[in-house]
Image 1 (cartoon, rainbow, N blue to C red):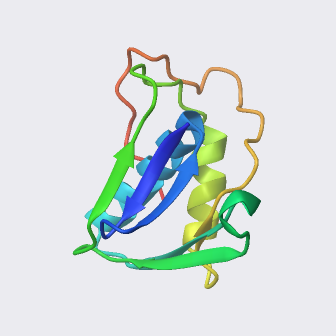
Image 2 (image 1 turned 30 degrees about the horizontal axis):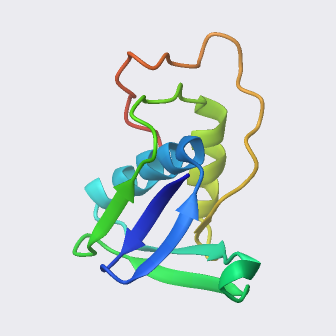
Length: 116
């Protein structure tokens, strides 16, 4: 279970595979200087509810992974997450869709920049 840390104080745990896909979408948006809201549901162990942060090029972000291996990349998931990031409500984690054959990358391949 990895962690997303925003501005050094707002933190949430996200499974490593999902965090990798979120990182690809977030960094692609920031490379293009496109700010956006990012929302997630809090676990009931921390009181539940929902948190939204405003992500912009000057934001301090940390993607902390539990595992050391890069998971394979599901292109369909990148596209689904990018769709939410470009909507007025902003980025939020959606369930992983089935990837189309031949589009997943192995752990040893560098991920291509997503088209978001």
